[in-house]
Image (cartoon, rainbow, N blue to C red; front, side, top):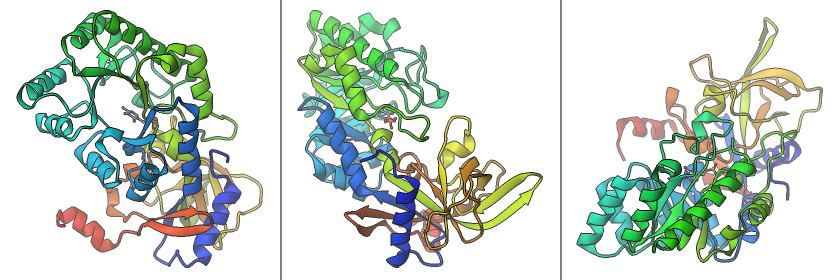
Length: 426
Ligand SMILES: *Cc1c(COP(=O)(O)O)cnc(C)c1O
């Protein structure tokens, strides 16, 4: 199955939702996930990596509980990567045992560390100060129930997108390998419970070469740790595999990545350690699209401005950082029929009150008219997950399609839901 929902597929899914009575007059936007495609991506990851690998899917990419439950039930090789207590609770509620949960965060409190150690998740410490907090917890409560790793910045260079690159010379995350190699090796030798190495290179802007170079740096570091008497039982290579978001710029697949690792870093797949990955967008991005109803179209000064019902509330990244982030757009009629017609340059505007509110500044789709639907593709990762309360618009309904059947994954928020959010009540 193709990694991305194509425009005809998106229109057919929208038509199904319309015919099935899932779209009322108040549904000015909706999100539809292709659950079979999500399964296919997760299964591709499982098949591409050696048996025993844990694929801890990044919850921040998409925290919707039905999706987490689905992944948890699909294969015992699938787990969750979390970076906050609520994400940890979401993973547990999805039915994952602690052993399939990886807890990463650069800002773990003492209480969070103690909770995670007692629960038995795999915890990746970010720095030496955090290791000292774990020392204290272990001295008091005994050995951790789960495994503990240490995050390293492999310093393989920044990717194409500065805000999501974490392996340049400087990063907010982990210990810089060049400056800290000796101290890292010593930290392992001194701590029998420290048995994992962790890195994560970035998100979307990284090349396969960078990802493979990071793995090579980690394998070399593991060798140095073992030579000094330390143990490395888990090698967590993070996520960061980009997702394709333009037909003319295909990104490597999960299978391509695994093949590149096998070729470029044989020690990773053959070593005496368990592999852990933390893919987010490569699993989720192409498995969903958003449909936003067109309210008005204004054409002045050579700009065709299509005003829709989704903007920076759901598409934060392309609105605030349009040079780095892109979503293809397709046009469908009010009945969900893909609109034929020449690609027309048009700006897809959202409903929010600021001038940067354009999920796509130059969409090449058939001309949209009021009542039509703008289909924003590849919306399965870092979209709903980054929902913003700016202007207090309710989140649209989220539907899931599997084997021809649609179900509601999350109902449309009501006005009362939003009021409750701001009041801070139940
Ligand atoms: C964001 C993040 C991921 C997931 O990144 P993707 O680009 O979605 O694969 C994995 N691990 C860590 C530590 C992250 O911060």
